Length: 253
Image (tube, rainbow, N blue to C red; front, side, top):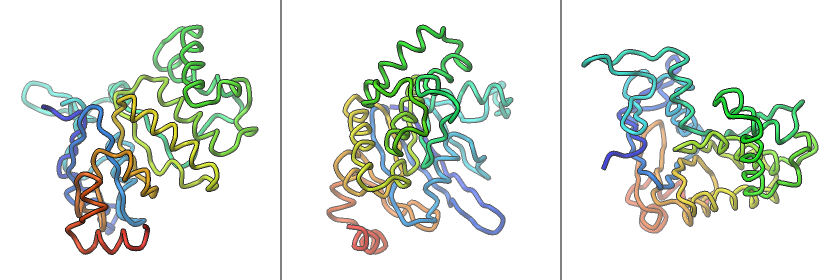
């Protein structure tokens, strides 16, 4: 079975800093894959290479069997135009550490922006879908509020609804709770758990080890830009094979 997402020997350097070193992983449809590891291990850069916010120096990323950022012309891969890449990117939703909401627009307007402006969806249809999503994340009553009136956790849940509004095949989460006060983390993780239960394919970079242990189908431990160890959460958290994995988990659990 072809994985929904395939990362194949991806390398990325910034100057002399080699951030990703031959990183490979497969994510199948409906799977939740959590990426854990110390700060600076390349986790966020990996996600940015997946959706091509960063261009890998070598290696390829495939979404649904199609290379990200390239299209076939005969037997040759040709780089996509920016407009072609934008169409391909719509298949992925990404939730960052920061919320990146439009502060001058109401919550409902933030959620419908993508479908209306990018997807060409009618405003009435987009609004109906947006209200369904805001209900899903527990914020239907905040539809007419402005982002600065919301807590950080509420803003992050709006950001999740906004990403879901584009009906992505894959959701990428880059440490979505790291900027939140501890008491607000649970609400965001609950929404992500619900998405996992509904079969959404997700790659989650996280420091929330409980979430990774309980929700992930597969856990990837990265260090020094490399995948050190990967496997089911019971294996990674219960019987890790590598000393670097054991020493990391001993510090964070």
